[in-house]
Length: 164
Image (cartoon, rainbow, N blue to C red):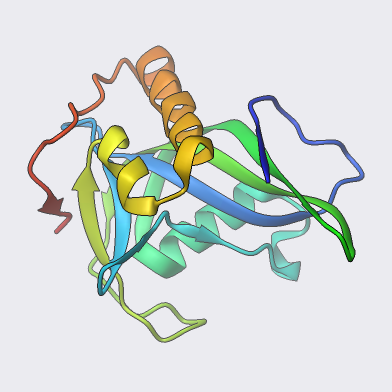
């Protein structure tokens, strides 16, 4: 995998994943899903009803998984995934601004219910365990949060809080 901080991915490259780095506007913290100690960003796989629109995938997936409603978003780049037996594909990342969080509900695809934890972008990088590529994605998203929304990103080490 390779992090590519540019937009858009090549037009002929398939997109297999769309994740949101979702910022809570008051604290500047990032929403991370907690599945009994396994952490991830809200997002998922494009479906036919998304009609090839990664923004439609972003909205649908962050709502299905974490019941988040987005106010605004901006792409920050993509991971280029190359596997021997498959052609290269993209995993898109968006920075997003949280508008509202509806009550937690099971993901309709998996039936799993995820806790929503607010952490700094720096701490999210460690929780996700994605190494330097993950840190670069979160740094790019934090830059968008500052430039586009005037947010002060939450400092590293803030107390973890659940998003109600």
